[in-house]
Length: 268
Image (tube, rainbow, N blue to C red):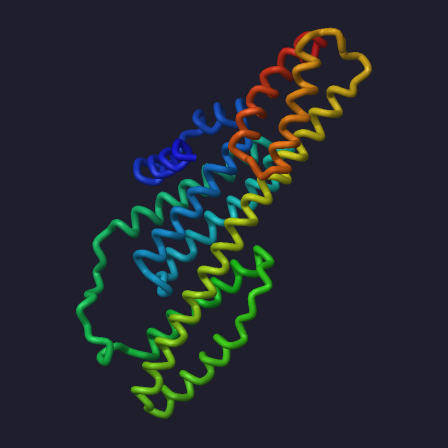
């Protein structure tokens, strides 16, 4: 995991991964593309929260949604279209790198303006756009999170602003920011769990394909690699059931090497 995180940070800082890099990883272990992209997604979300809180600029939010959509597409294409998966991977990493660059650029807006001098209407509109993006992400991940309280607060604060209730509208706006922050945390937690579930589902699908290959009656079951492969499949299934993904990944690497030997021996 440390190696994965370090590589992700390297990509975000120094540029988009090359197609040759994704080719190499896709050939050796396609699942690593999903893990890297998912980790990069998480890293960017952390950067966005630390830099903007709940007021992410619209252009940055659009880039994130593009990258996030590419990660989801990568998950779908990985099992049957490695070329599309590599393209999705590069799109996601490029979007996340652009966001990282934007975050690192000096802001042209001053942060020293007192809160009572802010344009509450503009701030509310910016917050509402972010909230709508958050709802879209929530729907994509089927979180089932209830946003009714936040929507009611938006109605209330608009009424307060229209009635020139400055103190009340400022207070309600701060309450909105706090509520949206809480929802954002819940969505991130759900997305993180979902990413883990998706990796497990993908791994089980790969095991099923390998098991079908091993059930091929034309295989020479007397070769030592066949017994090793059967043993590794059982071991990986146990590791997955125990939610031990790192060790399962390591065993998958061994299994893929054994399967290549078996395929060559069978003339495939």
